[in-house]
Length: 551
Image 1 (tube, helix red, strand yellow):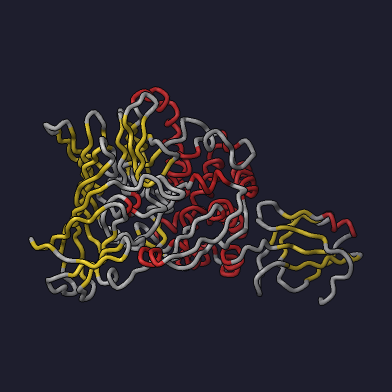
Image 2 (cartoon, rainbow, N blue to C red):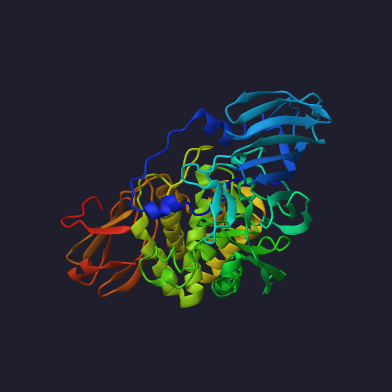
């Protein structure tokens, strides 16, 4: 197993609501059970999930089982499984014997009969049935839909709810299997497209078909997906950094011709991201784009696409620059998560910025690949209109933490750090180095911050503290008295000392090194008060006038 956590996608409500006020959520006992590596979880490590689900579209129910192979890290007697109501856990079987459990909400603490010896491997199977909740706040969870011709269509998207909204597992963000089988039975003529490679298709006399998919790599549990509809398939190959990468496309049948045109964006997008981030992380499982009845989700090796074949975000440019209408948002944003979110994965909801800040910044990099460096930066700067600064980017450990600033503000912090690095080759090596160093790994936010400081060759700790743990925007305060420019940082954490690129009349572009204390420099004239701060830094500037004092 490799321990991992949440990968996020795009939460339609959070982004579309944009200017809506954001407030911190109220946390519950159930959040604690799901978010932390408690005593029923810490002693065992998932090695393999063997998931089998039958979808009964006639009554919107599921029935199936999940085989769980696990490694024993330390002795344990009680194992926590998760399955969200109204689904029903029918039985848990180990070595041919049914086990008993105590229930605490959506957590089931299963009493094990056999000794669990450190270093050994064991397995059990959890059987369940019921009608999953089709909607949860802010997410589709398990959705029952119809296509525009009235055909059945259903799909999962459980990032914000947890995978236990539709199957039983260890629904902890810091643990995932090394590999997984996903066997989904659906009524004919529907086709199920899940993650990884299709191993077999088995038709049954009752008018159903089982599609067995296999994921050869570690996978986030919320990334495991059902997409069942009237799909057709076409394929291509791109010559990537690690060799031929298979591309599989699954639109609904009546969109085939449209998909062949719109989805041509995949190849230049992959080339751009491999240039900046390194090899696509899932050559063994391939790249898929699957039409979905909702907006989109970064399901590993099977990106869910529901952008209605429009450019931008459902036809909108989130940057208000026009640049966001030159490409398809869902293809560009969700695919970036294959590197940041699926390859490098945060171990805590608190550090969801690792997924969304980098994936949003990747939109700017793709714009740069298509239109040049200045255009890429302008796109990210344009996203500042969506920044709310109502909550810090980093949230409380173990608890749900999701708001739009982890997208827009986080991307602008990365743009700012790129200015500090001031070396595009080094910046590229930093991004590629992140994906190489943390290849197929879970990480803490501190690990990423520390790596970025090392790779950048500078201490970024106060930069991260300022932008990620507070809602304050640094203010470059300055004044000119005769031939003296005085300047400092205001609205900052103690010791904040980020350097800044400023254009000063008579002196041109200069690097200044403000701190939270006043500093001075000689300038040719009082015209220096008309200085301009490089807009690629996410800061504000204010001429405070009068005597600077204290210098």
